[in-house]
Amino acid sequence: EAGVAQSPRYKIIEKRQSVAFWCNPISGHATLYWYQQILGQGPKLLIQFQNNGVVDDSQLPKDRFSAERLKGVDSTLKIQPAKLEDSAVYLCASSWAGGGTGDEQYFGPGTRLTVT
Amino acid sequence: GESVGLHLPTLSVQEGDNSIINCAYSNSASDYFIWYKQESGKGPQFIIDIRSNMDKRQGQRVTVLLNKTVKHLSLQIAATQPGDSAVYFCAENTSGGTSYGKLTFGQGTILTVHP
Image 1 (cartoon, rainbow over the protein chains, first blue to last red):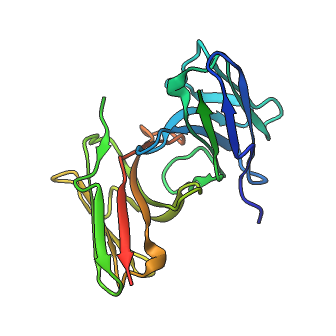
Image 2 (spheres, rainbow over the protein chains, first blue to last red; image 1 turned 60 degrees about the horizontal axis):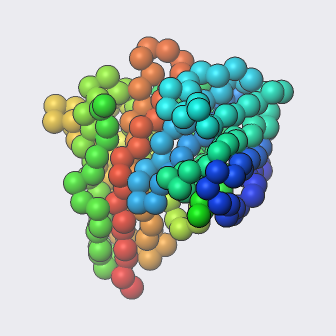
């Protein structure tokens, strides 16, 4: 079974520029998650999709971050404009159901973003 | 807000020793707990989980203990191997009775295993 795919793996941009990340979840998984992992910290949930609907985006900085999952499969996360504090690894994960008890989340390798 | 935390940020052991990684959580509503292993350049990898109605669960070389009285979680790794070297995160899942879960991760513990 193929895992969660993410691209690009690395990205370096200047502050105020825009950047987009792509995620392809495990086939058949209904729920997709985007996490931000700052160096030395645990991942923090940014947004959770169930199929193509948003379940939770309470920690997404909506003034600069946006995400979509139009057809309920692939997803993109965009930052516009980027700030220095956005430097982090952006992880995508997916799970079969809604992420409740016993529903394992599978993580991709992440995209390491550096904002200079 | 409520969060999950760890007592020790680093743990160094000899190959063959047993390792114990601890975690304190504060959200009494959390009903599901997971331990993840993260190697450099990779995403977190599921190790073992435990539901709030249990106090112990065993896997292959790993055991998770849950003490709800003091809101404490631990991961025990038996016969630790160099390949176990990684950052270990505990995470709590709060579903609030719904089918949706929300994971909150702790800070992480760096485990280093010396040959």
